[in-house]
Image (tube, rainbow, N blue to C red; front, side, top):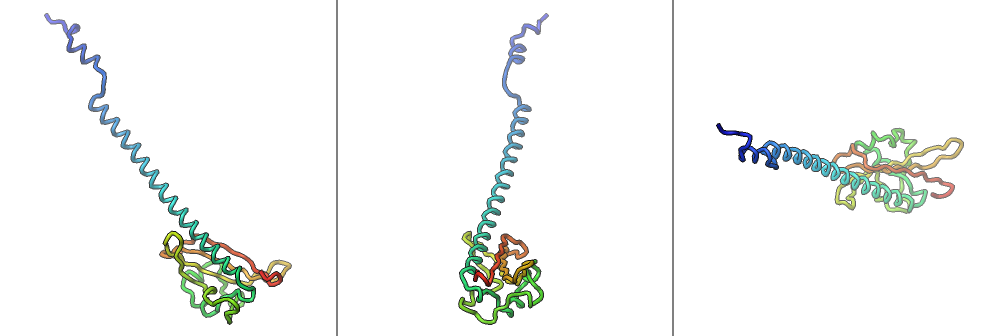
Length: 179
């Protein structure tokens, strides 16, 4: 009779250490799941950085346009009424738009600044090379217990999808200070 308990082959198989095929496949699957999660995280980060870049560029364009308004005389702040009426959508659907012409700051003459600084809708290229639509609104606002001021609102939209608003800034201009 042959004793199996003392077999050198059986003892060797039981004492071997290492990975079998099933363990190796399980470990590879776990690594793949981890790597795929990292790729998804990187892709999400890239989208976030791209959006932040767009918002920053749009904000810089809005600030630049507002500084252009601050650089001109108070009397020259206004928009030619025919250009406001003819402005393409979504200009007239923005909350800053005033449907009543009496509430808009009309400008019949160019004043001291070039007329090109006073267009309601313009397309500009940002520092990132993308196209942006810059809408300018000028309205009369009366402060409670005060006088009427000119409120200039600059809205920067995506050049391809004008329903996406990337930046919005507003500033009031007072005749008594000339600013």
